Image 1 (tube, rainbow, N blue to C red):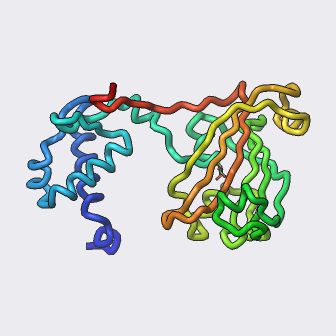
Image 2 (cartoon, rainbow, N blue to C red):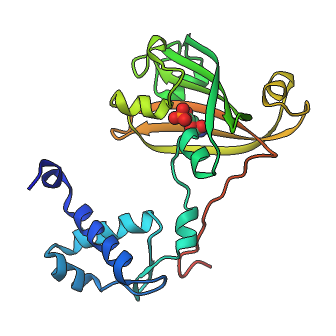
Image 3 (cartoon, helix red, strand yellow):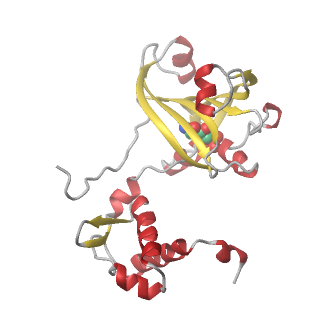
Length: 242
Ligand code: GLP
């Protein structure tokens, strides 16, 4: 057995098995084997089966119907389940070639709003990176990111490669994030950089992202051109919701 499979949780192995069964032999809305059957197939406890199913439900691959069982989800919804992506990954998945123009990289003292989100003391040292993000060479978003100084000292930022790739290489792989999305209108500076008329509408997505240990790694404000970017997400109702 390889080290990787030894350290894998049992429920992950069961989840991988169920994923393979779905891919090989089940379609949308087909029932999964019952909990008891899955316990027998994988020789694991009910808790492990439930953890595996919860993982697959989080991914949007299956859904539970209370008192009935677990079913295979719809691939359309699955494809639209929001994923935590970098700008680079997001643009590639939309069919654009991503690139960036770095506007600022500096060492700054965290103001209260930044310090709170990054779990730093007010005035704590952080790295600020401001980039114009392009898709097929045309402005798509204007992004300002703050990272705790020890996560990425400003001298070590590589302007030519993906920030998330660099964080992974440094041992701070982004794992989860909370986001807030709101509408904004663009001032002179932002509209000039994004190449749209002054006062144009845009979509701002603020993200606080944490690594696997749950430590805040970045606070980002990304302003997307309203005429070029939209945000899709799948939503569902639990059976029994009124
Ligand atoms: C998106 C996110 C930002 C993140 C960035 C990283 O734009 N909203 O929070 O910093 O991706 O992008 P990349 O890894 O391509 O530099």
